Length: 146
Image (tube, rainbow, N blue to C red; front, top):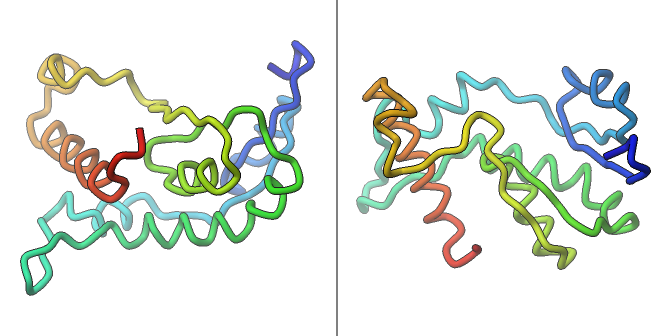
């Protein structure tokens, strides 16, 4: 996109900042996140239930979204994009797109999932179940967003 003359802004962790900047994108860093802790907090290891039976939301993903929004919101309010692409687990992208009223596309950079073919795409039964559960929890947190 940069080579074609488009302005590209990208939010990433400090770990990837230099690599993204080398491609010509404007980089804003989000807080760092320990993936193993996120997986644990999401409840992929064991289901979390509150006393009233309601699901607990993946706290670390929400903490990351809150911290990311605090860092990137001023930039994107001043530099409103034409389109916002965000990773499915990057809740800040979905929230920011709504706040600044721009079209958004939810991306999955790992693979193109097809729930009808999930058994072929993800042969490991436990990982497949966990991936579906994670998607369901995020969809439930953001009802009617598509």
